[in-house]
Image (tube, rainbow, N blue to C red):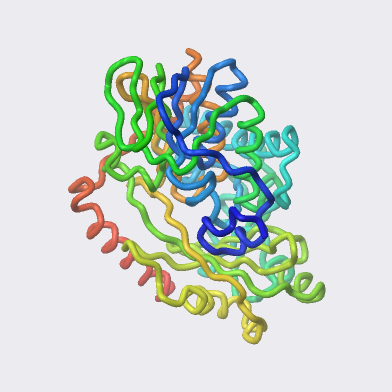
Amino acid sequence: MNPRQAVYPESYFTATMNRSRDFPRLQGDAQADVCVIGGGYTGLSSAIHLAERGYSVVLLEAERVGWGASGRNGGHCSIGQRKTQDELEQIYGHDEARRLWDLGVESVATVRELIARFGIECDLKRGCLQTAWKRSDADWYRRHADFMQAYYGFDLRYVEGPELARLAGTDVFRAGLVEYASAHLHPLNYALGLADAANGLGVRICEGSRVQGYDRARPTRVRTAEGSVSADHVVLACNAYLGRLEPRVAGKIMPLNNFIIATEPLTAEEQQRINPEDLCVYDAKFVVNFWKLSGDGRLLFGGGENYTRRFPSDIKSFVRKRMMPIYPALSDTRVDFGWGGTLAVTMNRMPCFGRLEPDVFYALGFSGHGVQIATLAGKLIAEAVSGTAERFDVMARIPSPTFPGGTLLRWPGLVAGMLYHALRDRLGA
């Protein structure tokens, strides 16, 4: 048994995690060009890309690398931004929307490139299917496929009827969009692979080293319980776990919890019936359902959210009832794992990038697109630290409004909004 499994929250991903070394706590004082706070995708990608540019890097992680959302998410790695291209064009204009699209495409390519370059074993697969329950969504799907093919040259195919039923393994949906440029993977093994890559490049990774604060001088002194790091640059890569560390940013995000189950391994016939092309799938509900097959043939199904500090007492039942309307034939299938994770959303569901004095860079609030956009964030932060900030600024120009009431009152407003949209999902509005 891998001893690291005992310190990660129990999930299918920890049960199938690759072996990886333990990293020591920060003890005593250290110096570096850059101090990265957070050992998820943003922090690990930042560390890799900074080290490759010749910077010395210390990465501080409060728990274990990949302990948070980076090791517990559904593993979807989708092309594009959280908002669709027609929405982005309406808000920002065609040229800026095109820049955001190009970065979204690059984000998935960056994930693939890192996996290939460092030989990361993480069940990487290709392809994505979006599904619509309602006729109004189906009509929009058709228009959107035409728009993306005509104006962006993106091979997004509209499907319905028997072809959709074959791809989705169910006849409950009205329409779908299928494309093969997106990817999906084992999220924790991807994070562990990034950590090994960073370590191999000379990054000093310190686990169990929760940051208590940092000053606003330069060089900045980043403090933990047992030591400190003096650095010219700081990268905030904490996402939903930012807490009170940086009040200037905290009110721009809202942590929420999402939940996933993993069935027992399915037979080859069952896998072929419910997902013959081994795609990652998600639906058009506001509180989205998402699913895929694991590397060992289980159905990994995510659905449902809550907005408190506690997870449901029975996560397996909580999520299973969302799976059953889609795959009633799995009613007798055993569920082996159920777990939750905390992610961060923003008011406009677009990621929040920026720079604070003195040379503190941040990227957070990925709103469900964290695998690829957080990985890209590290690449863009490294560019910005080295003095080439044009591409980072494309993301930083996206407005990041503060939740009404900031960190004190954001929760009631978000809950009210989420409950409203969840009701619309149930009513088919």
